[in-house]
Image: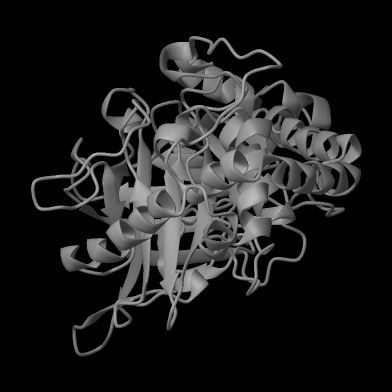
Length: 430
């Protein structure tokens, strides 16, 4: 009952099979035409082998007066189609209006097709240098009085939001690093903290058509937002920061006193850097006082983060792409570590070079509270780390759990034929 997406550049139609549906491999196809006695002839049937091999099925639409030939390509992934009135600028600061549509092929989808107005812009530093772009989407709708409102919807079973990410996965030949790493944190330790705050995000694979042309395999997700851990712009005693750059692993101050290479991720003004300065000063002041250092962190969250960054070999997340949420009480400060943007993990770098990581390689900060605790009370802290690691390796980080996740992603990428289409579309990224 849904209109097929048509790729004008490749001259083919695209069909997403509903998961676990008995009709998926034998769909009813209708032609909308003013002509009469229209018939369709397909040269072969849909099969799992044909889908995985990205083999197109040719067909002819005809009657007594004319015929039209084309092809049908099939996928087992959800499909997004975005159309814009103008070209998307290659700038993170400029947005373009868009029409958004997603086809959710999951068996239990409450809505098969969701459409929305909105805006789109390029996101991520790598998107400015790679030919394939990642995007940030803001969904909206217009009321009868002309006011534009945020359109909070659930896409692919993810949380309701108006703010979405389309991650291009260009710099990852296997197409799994960021998706696996992000989803592993979310499914295992994201709420392992004193208030069970959700410090995780998640991704799901999709295929994207942009202005009627196939644009490749993407991952749809949502950004880490301060509001999901109870931080609002009206409360000056809770702020979320992000480390952006600084490969020397040292802490410097800007001329206005703001900690260098940090940005404010919650919707606070620049005066809110005072909370971060106070926190870092205390971490330095208490560097040899374990009890005071423990007050600055949530020990479960800190150990999880330390183990996680080393597990995924997140060399890039030591120097940037890490969130620190700080909460101020009556006589206390407490920080939560939150990972972000795990594209350069498992030995990967930009331009597909390898990071020389050995079994002995260890990733540590050198100025924050948990690192200081490791130095001032090593035996107790290391014992806690070992205990937590053993527990995780027996449960959510077990070989079976990890391999099951990786196998599911491999099925998404290869059984759908998406990897082959991605390779044809973006050969240098595959």
